[in-house]
Length: 139
Image (cartoon, rainbow, N blue to C red; front, side, top):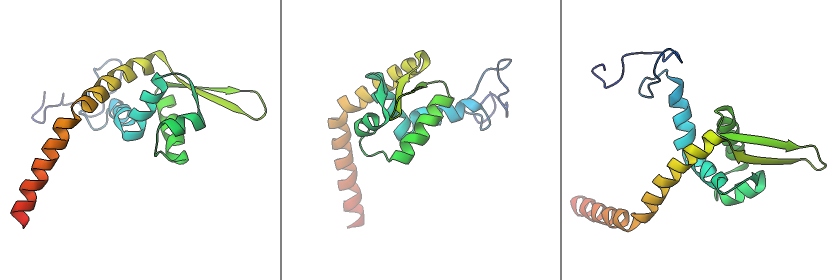
């Protein structure tokens, strides 16, 4: 480990080396961003429920734009987390589902999501205390 807590490697070259998400050039960092970003985590969570078509997925992930969902799906597909199946029918039909790796990642994310949802009463109370304390200092 170097003084910044990383392995000291700058390029994270692959199989011969351990991947280190704390290294700025390691490809694992990009995948972590795809998975933990707002739309990535919500998309993975929604697809954990089952195979969905694009518009059904967009409705499930409330608030995501068509463009952002498309970009998110492309990134997750490239990372091997989502499988895109185009059906040769008219009109075209495209289904999205998790790969086995995507299911593993989604399971971990859903654990985090459930933890956050289950503790929101505490979070809301903390926010209220914070806002009151800061309002008292400013006012």
